Structure formats: structure tokens, C-alpha cells
Image 1: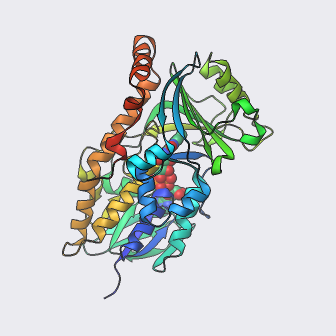
Image 2 (image 1 turned 90 degrees about the vertical axis):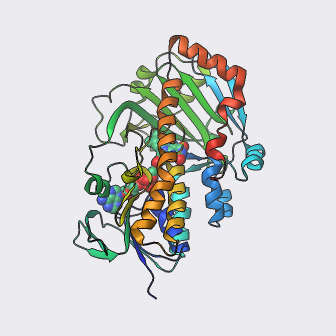
Image 3 (image 1 turned 90 degrees about the horizontal axis):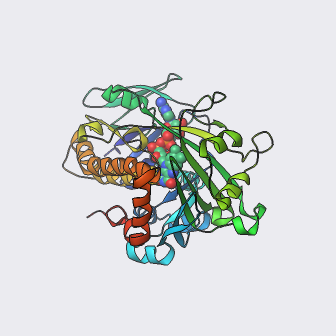
Length: 400
Ligand code: FAD
């Protein structure tokens, strides 16, 4: 019997994870990526044990260990005073508790290891420079047409084409993503170029009024990823979603912070002289998913940011995309159910968890950026309950 064929729009972390999982489930894959090359931006992500457990189950544990960092602690500090409010041990403790590690990794590295794994699977065809323009689902087959005039048929289509998903636009016809008013400034620093006191092997979250900064090691600890999130409108010089940014704009937006944090921020080289200068991303999201019909209809499903773009305050957008891919492949592999039924099961299995993570991400942002009494209460709670607040068992435990 001929292999069933999955069409995938988008070759980011979500699309590649879906390709890998689907081929492992016995489907053939045609993946269409709009960019002329597979690539990821120069920034890091954190991957909780819920995501690394899946990577391990796909045989990627060793490859992950070669490129990621595995911080020993996550610490939360007050951005104004510098005081450490609470600590969550990661390292072996997390690995033992959740049977998988807490990893911090360069996006290009996780993307690269997924791509290498997909390329080793024979029934997968990867089409670069082929942005998906539209699809046609006739109830029996689904086809995609690309911006360059290619049309390919398959048995199912998954839209993994990110925040501004074209597949979603055609499938759901809902309003575009909303502007959050939060701006992410990000940079990567070589640890060896930093003064000793600024080097770190921990995940540190600095919480300040209307801002927070997260730093963590990547590339086996050789580099440090720094993301500062402030509220406001982008500076006038800014255009587009990923652009060069200026330390002076960030400094103005952050206001007064403690000396160690200021020194860290000042260590980022200026835009005019260095590729690792600040880059600015204005953040957009969508309201949490409100039903399974928002994740699949007929022969078409959505996955990753196309389905549930979220604020990065649970550090779970890519993690949810990886979970989606695993659940999607599980549904594809079900016998005795037609393809719309399988996609429906995927959507049913996923939408509430994704909605919960989206909602928690919004709430975390409010708590991280709080002012006045709320801020005081936040600091007191973290001091008092530390680990109990910072650990997230419902998220990190294996799905039952
Ligand atoms: P994308 O990465 O957007 O990939 C979509 C792909 O589709 C792209 O390659 C694009 O070129 C392609 N494409 C677009 N349109 C088309 C089309 N029409 N046809 C074909 N191809 C198309 N997540 C975590 O898990 N942990 C973190 O610590 C974390 N930190 C973050 C920090 C910040 C500041 C931000 C902004 C996000 C963070 N995230 C984090 C979220 C994470 O980056 C995203 O959720 C994840 O990358 C989404 O992957 P995706 O494959 O769904 O979408």
C-alpha cells in the first residue's frame, strides 16, 4: 500500500519536528519552506523536560547533549535591588524528577539537529524557496500551491508556518495576531569576552517594574543569551519584526536597575560595530485557543505558533510546537480512523493544554512586570515559597 503523504507548510522548529515525527509514524512528508535556506535567528531558547523528553524519544538525546547547555539553577532576582528572590535547582534534580533535562540551546542548534534527523528519513522531501500560497481540501485529498507555481497533493496538510500563518488565514479566516506592546531586545555574548563576575552558567530572570531580563548559557556554556523585555512602542527608527536595535533606546526604556544588571546590559556591543548587538522584536500573540476547531478542520491542522502563538513568559512556544508534533504523529498513526478523524483527535488532545500555557504566559508577564503592592507581594511569595512557585509539575510531567 502506498504511504500516506503529509504536506507541511513551514520549516521552523515546529515544521521540522512534525516532519520527523510523521516519518517516524510511517507517513511520507513534503515540506515547503518559504525561505531560500533553512535557518534560525541567532538567539537562544529554553527547553523544559516536557520538550526534551520528546527529543530523547526521537533518539536526539545525545545530539542535544552535544550542543545545549544544562544549567544547574534557575534564579529569580529583583532587577532594582539585585537581591536573589528564589532559586529552582535544575540539573540532576530536574532530570531525576521528570526523567528528562532542562536545556538551554541556540535556536540554530535545535533547528539543525531536527533538520539533520529529518534528512536521514527517506520518505521526506524538503522544498526550499516555496512559500505556500493556498491550499485546496476537497475532502478526499488536499493540495498546496506555492508562490512559485508548484502544486503538490497529499492526504493531510499541517500549517506550521508561524505567527503570520497563511494556512491559518485560509482555514480559520480570523483576525491577525495582536500587538502586545511588549518589545524583546535580544543579544548573544561570548562568555570568554565577559569579565569573570558577569559570566554565568545559570538561568537568571531579573524582574523589574514593566520589564524583565532573562539570561542563560547556550552552546555548552560558551555563549550567553540575553533577552530584555520592556513595555512600550518601538523606537521610531525601528521597522519590521527583527531589526537592529540601539542600547540607548533600551537603556531609556529600562530606567534605573541594579549595577550587576546594568553592567551585563552594557557588555552588549553597539549595533554599528558588531553582529551580536541588540536586535529588537516587537512581540505579538493571540488570545488562548478556545476550542479544538481552531487547531484542525477536515484534512488541515495547525501546529506551533500558527496554532497558538504565545508570549514567551513560560519559555514554551517551541516546547508546545514539539509537543504538538509528537501528538500529531500519534494521531496520524491511528488505524481504523479516517484522516479528518485523526486530525480531530490531535486537536482535541492539544487545544486545552496549549490554551493553558498561553494564558499562563500572559499572566506571568503581568506578574513579572508588576509594580507597587503587587510587586511587593510577588517578591515576598517567591522568597517564601521559592521552589514551589518556580517549578511547574503540570507542565513538565509526562502527559498521562
Ligand atoms: P516559526 O519559528 O515562526 O517557523 C515558521 C516557519 O514557516 C519559518 O521558517 C517561516 O519562514 C516559514 N513560513 C512562513 N510562512 C510560510 C509560508 N506561507 N509557506 C512556507 N513557509 C512559511 N519558546 C520556547 O520553547 N522556549 C523559549 O525559551 C522561548 N523563548 C522565546 C523568546 C522570545 C523573545 C520569543 C519571541 C519567542 C520565544 N519562544 C520560546 C517561542 C518560540 O520561538 C516559537 O514558539 C517557536 O519558534 C515557533 O516555531 P514554529 O515552527 O511554530 O514557527
